[in-house]
Figure 1 (cartoon, rainbow, N blue to C red):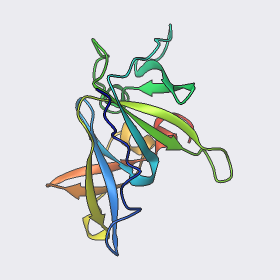
Figure 2 (tube, helix red, strand yellow):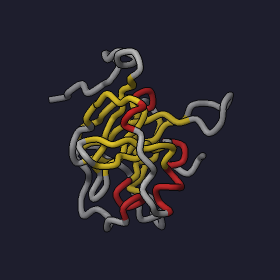
Figure 3 (tube, rainbow, N blue to C red):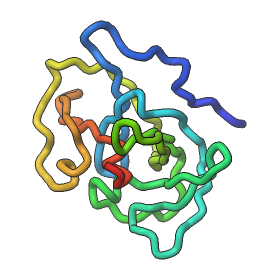
Length: 160
């Protein structure tokens, strides 16, 4: 049974002064993406493996008539070991390397669905220490007592 996990039905933002963020938990790390970068969730994604790929690169995923990169953010950001099997979900995201350049797409492997939360400026906190976060995160907020880095999708896919 095909399920629709599209985010298109959600409002563009939250109440005044707040923004919607998607929190992803990926094998040892939690991080957030801006709502406008998250497009669709695919259930039981079947990616074509790419020989000699990076440990975080799962493969190429068919999506809307083309193939997009499917990555394991847990390997990339938390140093988790490579996956023994395919992920349960893939979150299709949009990215733009610089203003005026075309929008590109990629996918992030997930074992659980992302959570949407409202965030305001009062939740800001410093980005956690570590080279992985400083290369991918653009800001950070506290949620349920934990820092949640906000990751730039272009940086996550090595395009920023």
